[in-house]
Length: 484
Image (cartoon, rainbow, N blue to C red):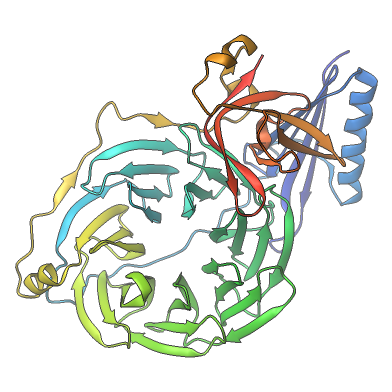
């Protein structure tokens, strides 16, 4: 029987939904592709015992979408809706001295994404590039993602990149994969993740919460817009927008508190007992996680684009729209203000006496934030920064978009896999595709966080290892290969 494809679109005026849904039947195989109009989208594949059952399953999927307002369309006739990107200006610094920059790596495009841990530094830019570097400034690897990187977030060992195409990619292995797919009508501004639960703040001031199986849990619309802040812990989700900061119970049962801020929130940070909101009115506000009460105010000389703290909030750092970086003590006293030497800091993180910035000119900057280095910089004595270059043979990793892009391994080869290799299987449960562990020694009721694009009923995969997450599911460690 000939291959049959049905293409549907749902596009609403006023910034609402703008997405497509495509179903293809090829014999006993059914593939579904969906996402934002104009983007490649995500792919899911299923197989059925007979061609008749495949056609029936496809008809059911199409009928569900038509009832939701989708209509037949011609692919390519409707243009993609523009993705909202943060419009920022960056003026020269008014500081009398420049920060003691140890090294600088230019990524080639404005960068918002940063994560720094004990092993390495990560930076993601609007060209879709994510680089990893050592703390000494050596470029280690590059990931090439399909669209611009909004931000980088970490959840234990796992690193995730939220992109303009609405996909959140897991970068924890050599081959990145789409771990979460954000609804096509949600214009992502910022992300945070806690125990596998993804929290998404958006252009319209909304908050969306998605579990580790990429399924919607709950959502809220704030009283403001432009939600550039979302932070989460086991107690609450802290959502910053144009009208202030709102805290919601982690299970979505209700609002815990709301605190107005002096101007809209442009960035957020958290410590154990406090959240920090950088605002357009030149301040960082420290708010109690328990009550939302203002605990301290840190005053800058221009709009605050980013902020961070040293452990327990002993020192508070801020980056403004005039290419300056500040340090305050916990009570709000300004200790110093220095120029970044290369644009305004759009995000930042502190680790072990160093402050890492990503800037409007697309640089990852490492600043020596020790007391001795800052004192010397205030007197005009700064080191000559090392200009980091990428190696010509730098490895580049791209996502596996479909099952055909995943390496295969024969059943006979499983016995020779490295210690800890695990076999998982795709199964149909209650109308949804799940992935469960086949190998012994694992909790059989737990599902595996697994790329939707390579799920196919009955398919088995071998992974280098699984890690039990505290939320009651397994995460993949290492490479994914299909068993044949």
